[in-house]
Image (cartoon, rainbow, N blue to C red; front, side, top):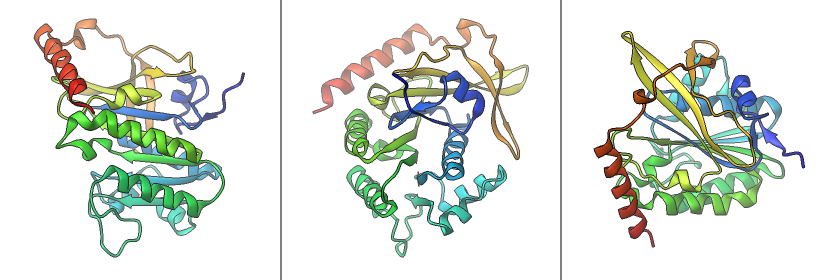
Length: 264
């Protein structure tokens, strides 16, 4: 049976995914800061606007104005899409009181209710939802990451919505921002970074995508002004470049076990 897919907005990534993300999936985009996660979400939303999907972008780490400016750096006019009613940006950072789409607090239930309210206004048809980032909702309670992620997926899955959400990742401990989102997500696209010959290099790998025989290689990526994210070549790296020390692995396993025992 053919699977209906949704373009990520990055042609090279769509090829690695055999055509894109399966429609109505919940995909986690994880990685350290500065690796390209937000730019992938901008691609995802820009593509939706281009093809006529209604789009919602939730920002918890930048203001609405900052997201609009960043999109314009890659020649995407998000303000025009907002004016035409094709895009809503929920500013969960500044939370302006006068804004009908603002959140009163960083609360998962309030977030989901606001998204449903907007989707009802959009009416029938497929919608793209970008959340940047989910980590903000459980910074003070990382053990709740799995429960919150499950709630988002369970409720919003009924609304003909493909969700791509970022989650910060601490490479040394995997403890600071919650781990459970990766268990709940239908797909995981992980971003990485490393210094090579004194230069910052960025990488991407598809770690998980249900119902998809996806590519399993690590790819070097570049962020090109006026273009966005480009997948340039397979990475030729040593396994030890990304292998964690044994004592760190033990800490991660111990932390996961403790979190699992805390979840109601």
